[in-house]
Image (tube, rainbow, N blue to C red; front, side, top):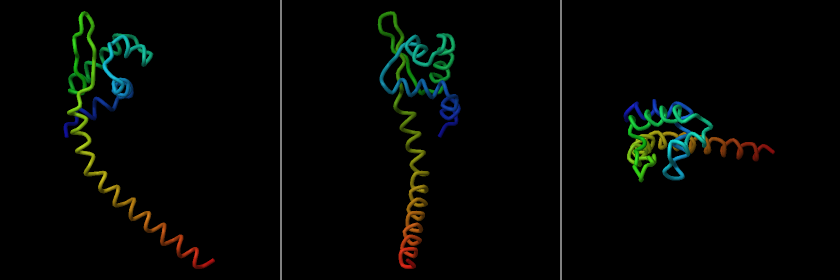
Length: 109
């Protein structure tokens, strides 16, 4: 897993841009308005997301629409899968422990 993805997503405004783009492609102006930023600020954040490969630009007439690229997020999901199984095991063990405590408590009452 490339750290570039994590670095790009660590900044709150860039993460919010990704969340906005979940709804579909947007222009810089749409993104700036959605986040309450000025266009130059939104453009700087989009440049980082572009460089990290998280978004791509589509030219439509005289507009540039930004949209999410699925591949980096699929890679991230695959990487996280390893940790999900670890946490699932731990949560299952915790659940079993809590059931034992409840059963023990019910037997004492």
